Image (cartoon, rainbow, N blue to C red; front, side, top):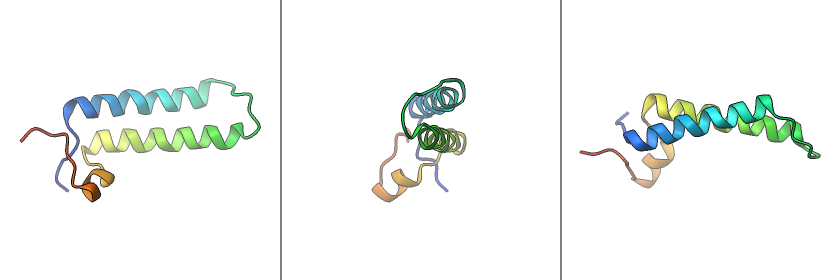
Length: 70
């Protein structure tokens, strides 16, 4: 796997991932499908953290995009 997530992109993914997980765990959303919304936020947050940790985004690979400096 060739790294395709740059430094700024990585930092934003870390902040977004932690924010989504924290919002899902520590808030009480009063909507009909709040459980599905909370699980969805946790899953997306984990994906964001994983892509930041490994510096590889599968979607970027499919699109041929990169935010890394060469």
